[in-house]
Image (cartoon, rainbow, N blue to C red; front, side, top):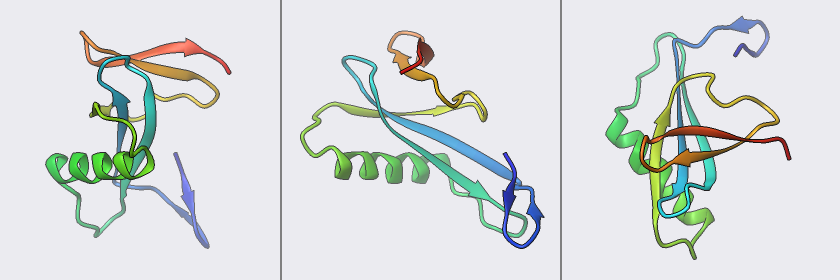
Length: 96
């Protein structure tokens, strides 16, 4: 992924997390933390805490949410995913 703002900037890291229903595997929220040169990288623990808080704020009725960090580029545009609850990995479900 390339980000532009008056020029091309390559991030040093992009960490992607999903908030999912721990009983069904349905993904409810995707969040990316992008670190550019000179920026402070967030810890996994802090990232997971922030992502879960954001997910709960968006879905106050959802009781059993969990967070999964996924590899960069694993989520492809136009594809619906769920989380395999045993393997804790993404599973493509198809297109909308």
